[in-house]
Image 1: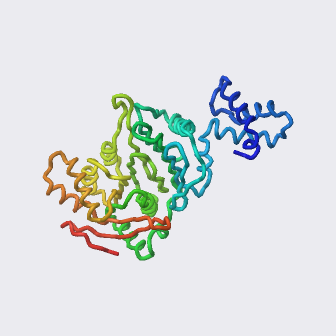
Image 2: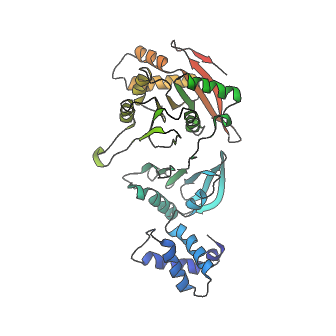
Image 3: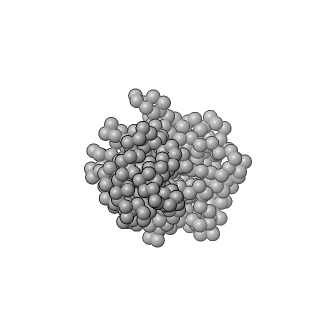
Amino acid sequence: MIAMARTDPELVAVVGRRFRSEPDGDRGDDAVGRLARIVREERPLMGDAAVIETARALAVDLVGLGAVERLLGDPTVTDVLVNGPGEVWVERAGQLQTTGIVLDRAAVDRAIERLVGPLGLHADRAHPVVDARLADGTRVTAVLPPLAVDGPVLAVRRHRRDPIPLDSLARPDVAALLRERLVGRRNLVVFGATGSGKTTLLASLASELPDHERIITVEDVAELRLPGRGVVRLEARPGGAAGVGRADFRDLVRVALRLRPDRIVVGEVRGAEAADMVWALGTGHDGSMSTVHAPTASDAVDRLTSFAVAGADGAPVDVVRQQVHAALHTLVGVERRPDGRRVVASLHDLGSDGRLVPVT
């Protein structure tokens, strides 16, 4: 809020009350113009520039996302984290920081409603978890009571439109080894902890691929923005009441196989879709990539094997394990350093016998 609004709380209250009582309510259509008209009527001696500035500041709170929107306007902020009513946190350059901005329950509820409402989604007791993507690729996750014990939780993650260069994430020798494996069409799996940079590295690797290749991306929430001309993006859909319109992750992995891909990029494997992905990688779709949540390369292989067994419709565990070992070629570990940087921390090749060979 600008200084004028902060030093004139009466104006803020009166304008807000009049704005909300108008037939157009809280609609965003020409909100600044309508607010400017009300401000001018309430403060006829205020200059035109101050009127417009005040109206724009008020519009952020009355129509936009309030403090959340102002924080997202900062290009150095990648995440805005609301842990229920109280102080808002942000992430800048990989570091969590407090902001000094405090939101009450009404402000948090309003921000969640204005984020997910235009997407046709509802956040209420019947739908206490919402995970969605805005038009600009920003990812929004909201968790409401009773699941969020201390009040509604909101996480807004803004992704870079341009992938981070591979050389910024890996030492020159490691970047060269990764490029060799991309050119050699090795199947890569990136592993690491939450927030370690798995999706960031996946985007960087994919941006190294030839522009003419047909790449199909499959994600729960579409975050990858790859530069190639032949990129096709698929995004899972939860569906409406009774599951109408649902398209889950596994469905999309299967669909991707029928779209004539040169390579498939699967956002994160976390379930039975691993069986379909392993089958795809073992039947000619070399050069594909994915991520998995795991602390080490051996844990990553074990988790992918467990997921594949769950989706293998009763196939013997030993057979599934052999297929996993044959389909996966290289495992890339990423981690977030204390200074917030995400970096490639390890590189292993996987033999068909299941033996992991450290490369770096």
